Length: 90
Image 1 (spheres, rainbow, N blue to C red):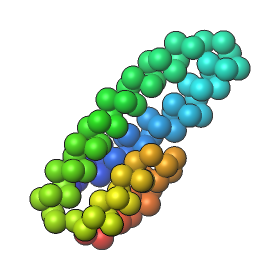
Image 2 (image 1 turned 90 degrees about the vertical axis):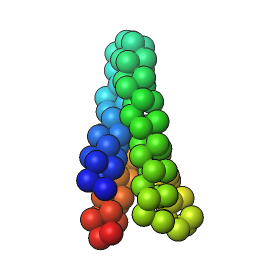
Image 3 (image 1 turned 135 degrees about the vertical axis):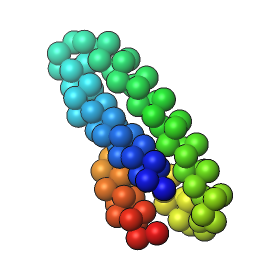
Image 4 (image 1 turned 120 degrees about the vertical axis):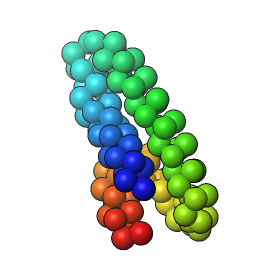
């Protein structure tokens, strides 16, 4: 579970970097390469997040509702803070 919490945190930070650093650099600074690089990194991390969440859900017998909430937290900015709190309680 500790590994999943770590990947969740890293994936969440990569989403924030993509939205609040790379996107402004692209549209305000005129450097689309920032989104290309950060988007690729975030995509790889998100795939890892989904794979680890699925593994943890099967291993720990999460309910479909909790698993859906975990997936939703993976796509909402700052959702990883909520997720980390929930995972600490498990």
